[in-house]
Amino acid sequence: MRIGELAATVGVTPRTVRHYHHEGLLPEPVRLANGYRDYTLRHAVVLARIKRLTELGLGLAEVRDVLADDAGRDLVEVLEELDQDLARQEDAIRERRARLRTLLQTEGELPADAPLSPELAALFARTVPPAGSPTAARDREMLALIDTGAAPEERRRLLATLATVVTSPDAMALAHEAYALLDSLAGVDPDDPRVDEAAHRLVACVPRELRADAAAIDLDEDSGFLRALYADVDPAQGEAFRRALRILAERAA
Image 1: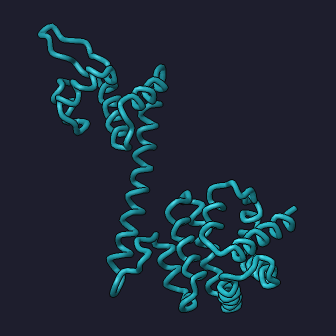
Image 2: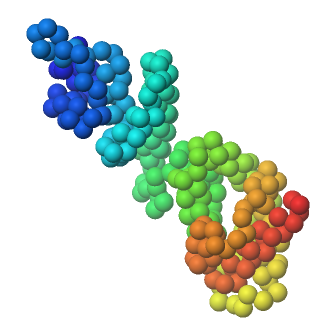
Image 3: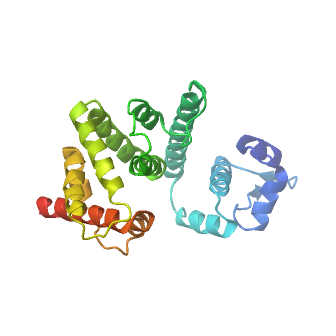
């Protein structure tokens, strides 16, 4: 392949190819008798890899390190990895499009916490949080945070479990009672007797399928997430969360 053909195959410009040669990222090909570079399929594979890595936000120095790790690997290995990368991209694109479809199909104004995954949007559509409950609003924010930050499989498992909970009137009544109890702790002393009651109510709200996950949470307050959570709630509410996690850990042990 000539440089223009290589560039067109990968979707870059010949100038970009020359720049990668200059930076030492793309090996120089052999030259034909007429002086033209003769690029091979491996050059196209490496160039595509460089393009993918830079699109992910890696700097050229970081790209160089990644490519160094590929040294000595045969073409099949590199092509298989590129195929896996593309498959992950396709999955991510499908999920983004599904979120967009959910938003486009929403009647009226979009919710304040949009965009959400289709699973969480469906979950929210099936639940009516207690009006005026700060704890219920925070609960939805935490679910939206998990929806964004959790690994896809873990997120789907969590939301599938919660979807079974919201179909149970008893479970939803228990959750509303927990919201009301936690709301009542705003501004009270952490030693208030209601704190212990709220902790046990929280434990009762955790689905059986998720109790092992909750019990495995590191109770060390230096952990970033817990520290942020406790800073975002009143001291008595934070104490209720601490006690609930402690109870779950003790039961699991």
